[in-house]
Amino acid sequence: MVEVDDIVIGAGQAGPSLAARLAEAGRRVVLVEREHLGGTCVNDGCIPTKTLIASARAAHVARRAADWGVRAGEVSVDMRAVKARKDAVVKESVDSLGEWLRGLKTLRLVWGQARFVAPDTVDAGGERFKAQRIFLNTGGRAVVPDWPGVDTVKVLTNTSMMDLDVLPDHLLVVGGSYIGLEFAQMVRRFGARVTVLEHGERLIAREDPEVSKAVQEIVEGEGVEVRCGVRDISLAPGPNGEGVVLSCTCAGDKRVLGGSHLLVAVGRRPNTDGLGLEHAGVKLDARGFIEVDDQLRTSVPGIWALGDVNGRGAFTHTSYNDHEIVAANLLDDDPRRVSDRIPCYALFTDPPLGRVGMTESEVRATGKPALVATMPMTRVGRARERGETQGFMKVLVDAQSKKILGASLLGIEADEVVHVLLDVMAAGAPYTVIRRAMHIHPTVSELVPTLLGMLKPLP
Image 1 (cartoon, rainbow, N blue to C red):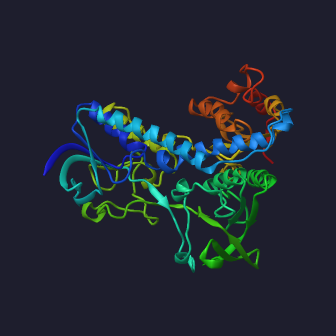
Image 2 (image 1 turned 90 degrees about the horizontal axis):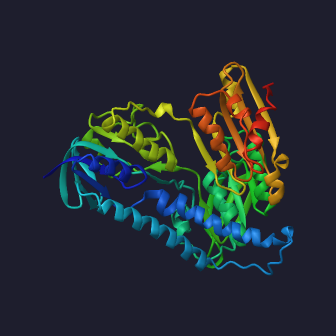
Image 3 (image 1 turned 90 degrees about the vertical axis):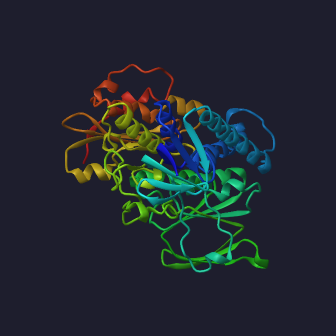
């Protein structure tokens, strides 16, 4: 038995940062990781996908070079070189994280599967550790539905897509939400045929309908085929055992599609199996996520859950914020809560979607009077200068308090511009603070005050 002060299980976005804060406070910390440092974000999520998206955009811009009066010639994509660049960026991130952790004197990194044997005791790496406090940051993984024939074909997920170094002839993407759409546009820009199959009646159904419509128009405009209302999927190997044949019904009609590759992006599940949570008494919710309170404490005193595994957020930034909340409460005498944060995220298609706060449907559900303004990106000088005028900006405001309730910004640099609104929302200030601000010209952000000057009652 090795007795320490704290055990952190999982080296994703929350784990290492929290372990470092604890170690810097002089506590003896064990950080347990079974696979790789950095978790999903660094290895098969944010960093590698956005690196691939950058390569795909370079190819897309090169093909459009004539639009700007530039002659680029024939454009080809070397997928092995694209993957090698992605691998190099990932390696640099992982190596940097490892070097940082090795420099923490009271932190010990243990490799292996962690498993509870008691509420304060964990087996890992062939040893048994006992601690006053245990923090779970085990993340999640892609869901692969139990479709008929799913075991007869090769199914790609966001993880196995990272190993692909060839250009698919025809990529079938099941799932028309954030992960699926990013991969669909990316692979199409590399030069492949791509078909997106979505169960819902529209893409990214959590967004307002006009956002879904605009995103669909963007990807279809680049040649991605989109089919919604897909049901009854079954799979079989293609001719000579290669590729995949996908059968389904679409809007009530039977369809059969052949593809060289199949990517499944229909959701994620928490990594709670194998942890022996039953030996600790940690409660799970109906979806299998670890139940936590507003300060990320589980049902068992002395055990916390952070990141994707707690179901309170599915992004790198929510996971990192989880670590900040726990560290503030335990080390800084600063009572922070999950409910304090404002929902925000982005869809990293090109152009990107920046989202903050409530959607229009959510605002309507409150029954409170609200204001709304919408502006097409064709009004934005920066967008016209760049020749990238797709999308629009939309903002919702409380009619009484004048505080910003939410926004959907779809367009060039929208993933950055949305923070103009987010920061004012976090400050609890009225929209008039931005409305009266002088912004730099020519930028995308300079049109946010103009947008707010167009507010009208939400019908």
